[in-house]
Image (tube, rainbow, N blue to C red; front, side, top):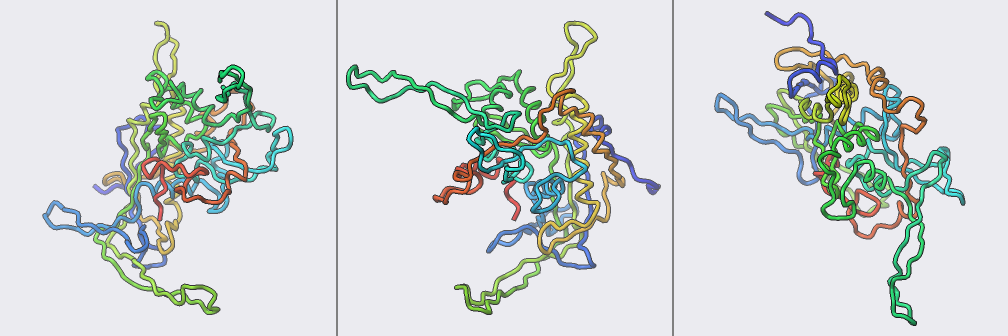
Amino acid sequence: EAQTSPIVLTPKSVLQGASPVVLVATLKPIAGLDRFQPAGFPEIGHVIYKAPRKDGRPESVCIVDSPASMANHLEAVCMRGPHDHDLVEELAGVPYVRCVTGKPDADGKLSEEQRELVVTSLTEGHRTASTYFLEGQIFDSSDRLVSKKVMKKNKKKQPETGKEIECKKEVEKVSFQDRLITEFGIASPNSKNAHPPAEKWWDVFRTVFKYDPNALVHGVLFPQYQIKIARFLTAHMEALGASRVDRSGVKFDRLGKTTSGQPIFAVDDTVAGEIRATFILDVALLRSFGRAEKKDGSDREKVRGLSEKQKEFIAALALWKIDRLLSTPFRYRSGCHLERISLKRGEQIIELDVNIEDAIRTATFRAEGNQAPIVTDVYWPSDDLYREGNGDKPGSPDGDDNGPEDGDSEDA
């Protein structure tokens, strides 16, 4: 019998249901177009491969967007616009981290009005693990940059004694990394063997959720601390029955002011019988972020890691992102403007029901009476942030990029 009404999927039903939850959206190009442009790179183009089918015939499948690219798109819907890094109004109250610069006064104070936004943990592929945040200096509640006095050995030998044990006080910035090391409970933070002890993983989940719950949706990696949290939401997009469409373009230099002349370049488009976006929610992973246990043989429960309401918020944020991406036509890139035809789980038509404002309220990001800001700002001096390049790899102020496995910087 044909399904008469869609199955309603809520954050609570996701958290309490079977794992994983697999949702498949069928899409099509807008305006009745046949062609669309998948992700690809210059001189390489996009990928079409032969996938075996049950009847023995191969089918041409095109990778339209990888999991890394889809994570970028799912984070983009959280922002007000491509060049506006504030969260949309619906997500007001969701914590995230910002990298800012500016000119502090003599007392190290830099007010909100004086801060220049650089990037956020929702626009950086490495999220909270990016050097933009880890090595940035934190602020106190009075908008002053936090520093600490440390004792350092002077390695210069004194002519009289030949000793090099003289110590002196120096002022060092307190970085966001310093705060995370403390709150994670990392053992041997300055050692290559740095890691959180097993019992401290509950603190890791709580701390990441406190500063940037989005990182628990899409995953985050701190390789220096042996902390890797996999994606709760993994998505990819493929086109089935795909064929390559080769066409060309030309760039005109009518004023003759460039050395490129009038280059002709190749453009790869695709036509396909069906475009599918697949979303996989690893519910078992989400459940592992926290659990409750009886305390001291009594009926009182102690929560380790995230509470049920906090895990439900992670599910709500993931469903909200999927719904936001699919609810209206979305431009994945130039020449790839797609709209949804259907959303299914198996053969069942699915309707997503998410009250994100209620989920934010019940997640209790701040304890009652705590006036600490939801948004965490970290500071970089503009001279360090915008210094001339020296051949380092891009991706962070000091060129320390940990590679594509650490974040989602793949979008072409």
